[in-house]
Length: 225
Image 1: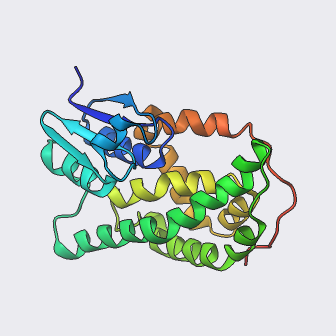
Image 2 (image 1 turned 45 degrees about the horizontal axis):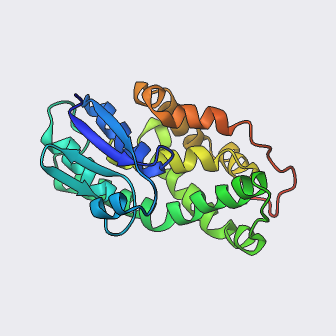
């Protein structure tokens, strides 16, 4: 029996963040699939989001709480700095990802790739309006990870696990690939994240390989600065 259980749909980006934290910590887990919005789902998380962690009698939702619990409840390498400023940097970057990166990169990827693959039109106004926020986000990411650093300092932390799925899949779009080509520090960080054993173990890596078969549009709405 696994030490912890994740309740989630298998293709949740935030599940992948939680799984990577567990893998980096050396905590074994199992996945129990959830049907989105089902009574079982809402009984675990009344907001209908994923994942949910179960560890014995402990049931937690919200990925920040889940990953913090994994880091503090189990032995293994620390995934957060010990000093107050270092901890604040981790929380700042997780907040940036949740508040700004996820709503733009995740949706951009779906609008640009997933919806056309399923025969639905993209929201062209959203794609065009995303230029400025995506450019800003990529600039800040590149500055943070320059010289081989990670988001919150010289070592891998939970903050990196929060950003990783979103930048990985955004980079599959023509616009994301162009921004990464112009931001070698961010591209290097992404390559380093993909080289970690926790990525190879994660269903995120399998999903990304399958995702690469989706046809990529050749016409871009804007040219990244």
